[in-house]
Image 1: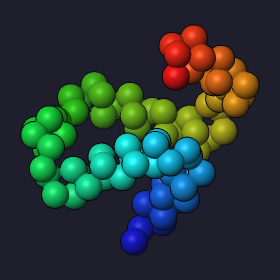
Image 2: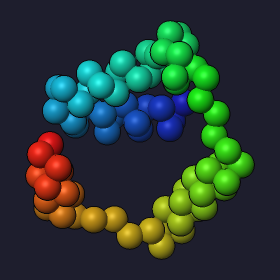
Image 3: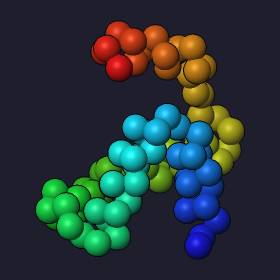
Image 4: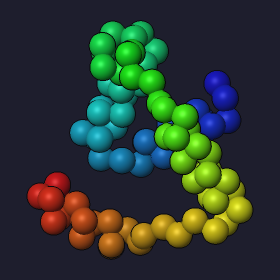
Length: 80
């Protein structure tokens, strides 16, 4: 298992059970390519560039994140 996958799974374990199941289903679909939408989706070059830029900002410590309270307010606003 790669370090990144290990870190992702550790973070997913912190989520509520329903969210863990959702993440697991997505990972299984990717691993088995059973989900037609997931198997057929490809990122555009622009999307890849945006992801790479975001990862660089995170690694550089220049990416700002919202607090748990701010995120809870967003979820509440959408009834989640």
